[in-house]
Image (cartoon, rainbow, N blue to C red; front, side, top):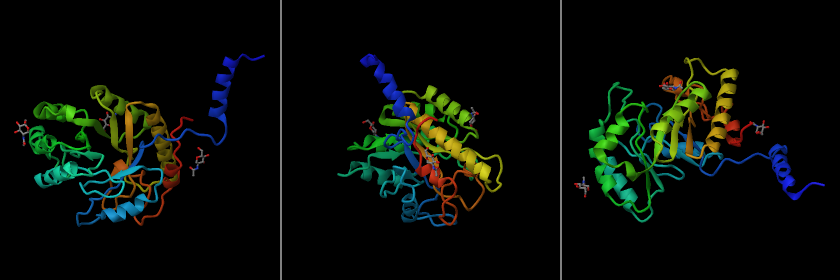
Length: 284
Ligand SMILES: *[C@@H]1O[C@H](CO)[C@@H](O)[C@H](O)[C@H]1NC(C)=O
Ligand SMILES: *[C@@H]1O[C@H](CO)[C@@H](O)[C@H](O)[C@H]1NC(C)=O
Ligand SMILES: *[C@@H]1O[C@H](CO)[C@@H](O)[C@H](O)[C@H]1NC(C)=O
C-alpha cells in the first residue's frame, strides 16, 4: 500500500510528463521589438499603426516597443533624448490615466551613425531631472539601457543624478551568438545591477555574416528562442524579455537581427513566427 505522501511526487511527475501539457509563459514575460524608426519619415520607417497591425500577428506577445515616446495600444513608450520628449513624458506620467511603464534613454552611450556618445552621464542626468522631479501618478520608470552594458556609463549616470532609486527595473540589450554566451552576459550584468528586476529589452542570436538566413539558421534561432524564454521563465529576477525583432530591417544589414525577425520585408511570416506564437517557456 502506498502512503498518502508518496502519491505527491508521482502526481507531479505525471503532470510534467503528460503529453500536450506544458507550462505556460508567465504573464508579461514575452514581448517584441519593432525596428522603425517609428513615425519619423525616411527609408524603412513605419507608423505605429503599421507596427500594431504586425503585432496583431503575434498573440504570444504581451507588449511591444519601438524607438519613440508615442503611446499606442499595448505599446510601452520610450523616452526620447531631447527636452521636448522629456516635456511630453512629464505630461504623460502626470495626467489622470498614465502608462504603467516608461522606458527611458535608449543606448545614450553610443550613436551608431557617428560612433560617439549621444549623451554623457552628466547630460543625461540633467535632461531627465525634471521628469524624475515630476510626481508620476503610477508610471514605473525603466532605467536607461546602455549599448555597452558593462561600461561605466550607468554607474556614472547614477552618481550624477542620485536617482537610482527612482527606477523600477534595469534594462539590457544582448546579442551574443550562442544561448550559453547570452545567459552568461545576462548573469554578468545582473551580478553588477542586482538591486532590481531585469528587463531584457532587445535580444537575438547575432549572426556571423550578412548572408540570407538558411533553414539551418532559422532552426538555430528557434532553438535559441525556445531556450531563452524557458530559462527566463525559471529566473526569478528576469521580468520581461523583448525579442528583437518583430520585423525585418530592410535598409541595411544588421547582423544582430539577421536571422531573428518574425515577419519579412513584406510583412509575411518567417519560419520563426509559428514557434514564437507557440512558446511554452518550459525546459525540455
Ligand atoms: C529637482 O528637485 C530638486 C530637489 O527639490 C531641486 O533641487 C532641483 O532644482 C529640481 N530640478 C528641476 C530641473 O526641476
Ligand atoms: C556577449 O556579447 C558582448 C557584446 O559583444 C561581449 O562583450 C561579451 O563578452 C559576450 N559574452 C560572452 C559570454 O561571450
Ligand atoms: C508547438 O509546440 C509543440 C509542443 O512543444 C510542438 O510539439 C510543436 O512542434 C510546436 N509547433 C510549432 C509550429 O512550433
